[in-house]
Amino acid sequence: MTGDGDPRDPASSAVDRLELSWWVDQGMRVLVFLGGVSAIVLIIAIFVFTASQGLGFALERLDWGQFLGSPKWRPTSSSPSYGALALIAGTASVTGLAMLVAIPFSLGAAIYIGEFATGRRREILKVAVELLAAVPSVVWGFIGLRIMNPLICELFNVPVGLNVLNAGLILGLMAAPIMTTIAEDALKAVPDTYREAAEALGATRCQVVFRVVLPSAKNGLVAAVLLGVGRGFGETMAVLMASGHSINLPTSPFDSVRALTATIATELGETVRGSDHYQALFTLGILLFVVTFCINLAADVIVRGIRRKP
Amino acid sequence: MSLFARTPLDARYRRTEKLVRILCGFMTVLLILPVAIILATLIWRGGPALSIEFFFTAPTDEMKSGGIFPALVGTLWLVSVALLASVPLGVAAALYLSEYAPDNWLSRLINLAIINLAGVPSIVHALFGFGAFVLFFGFGTSILAASLTLAVMTLPVVIVSARESLQAVPRAFREACWNMGATRWQTIRRVVLPNSISGILTGVILEVSRTVGETAPIMFTGAALFLPFLPQSVFDQTMAMSLHLFNVTTQVSGVPEQVSYGVALTLIGIVLVLNSASIALRMRIRGRKKW
Image 1: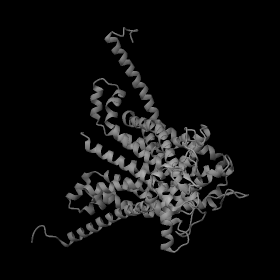
Image 2: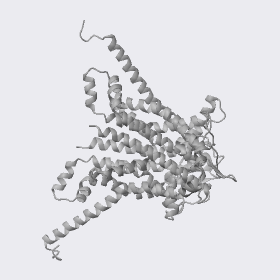
Image 3: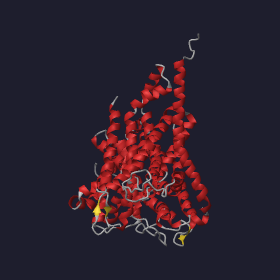
Image 4: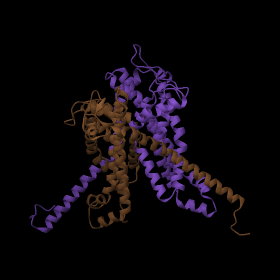
């Protein structure tokens, strides 16, 4: 910069403006960079804050054998025991049933929308699936409690309709639209030249789909399923309201169970801050975080696998 | 014999083809139909509860009657504060990923962090919000703490959709601008953002819809079962639509069914209207785009 030029001197004010815009550019570059790394900072912060509340207890006082091997979750009894096995079994059974429902339906729907449906019908179905994915989980829980519950009681002649079946179906309906969307994206990622080449050889639509498109979209489809599992695993309100919320090792779909997430949601409000019970709930949170983190990581690695290929 | 006569093999292929098509179509319909039925049930049973009075009065008689006004106002507070926090941050992150970041380990790490941020269970977000905003930063159980928790949780929605609409702006637009001597930021400010703003808006609407429906993250961070007054500042607690639905369904006994159906219908109505608006906007942009 060449001194304080006369503001009426056009050359000098142009230099000033250039300099100013250079500084603005540098400033914005830093700000935008901070925004960019915020996602990393936040995910680390989530782990640190959850761990800092629960890790002391998890490492020092928690009996891990009991935690993973005993179904007795009795944090408020006079001799408290923290066995999470029943909670893990509850989450696993509900998620498992949900996937049993969601995987075939979401893959079928993805194939139909992606490969068979055309034009207007395709657009309408895509919008419908997108709207389905938007229904909030508390509304799904309400549906499980108020609509599915009496329905299951009547259909299967059981006293309580809040059980693995109910929560699994609700969770399946919840996860299916998301899985459909991701699976359809995976199908769309298969280059059209593959389809054209197969059709030129005389393959029918069906053969193109099952022999060419599905095998080359395999990784993306696996990722879709994994993300669905992750979603089911971490779902809170719907499972809390539809599963019956009683501690049980389920032996049939008509048993009520309690999920890891639901336990945190109902008990955190009643605990004394810093108590063993409070820290045990944060330990469950760490467990949930680590498992979903691994699932998401695996999905990402698998998807990256297809991108590597030319 | 004609060259194109149908052979038995050909006929078999056609049959399989038809069967698969019908089966897949059937599955799609089965996916959508239950929800359509459920929605109809909600409208049928909850519709009669809705009235101007229902929307604009507070719950009375231990929530057994009255309306949902404080919950609606509370949700508005939560969403507004959450947007103030997450939209600038999310758009900045999207700008970094789309305009600045080279394809290196850092941008891959950011992408991974975004995927994980979206995949972390909502209840873990609640634990984080409680540990960080309520305790560590000392906001207490307040709208501020709840909104920030919601903002963190819905941040990936903004980032992903904003990044998509930024990347949809052709590279030639930027190059033309750079060649005129504009800085990177001037290019973004004058060319990239104006061309992608409506796309970003669709993402923001989606985020609003997500924020309205989330329940678990606000349970311990700022939402209350019942408050006789409306929140006056971001440091007050508030009622919220999503938690109100949970409460009238499970926590408070003796609430007439019609009231809980009414709350559910209102909540799902808000969410579906917002999502439809976002989809409609997206389609309009797609139709209008000249490049």
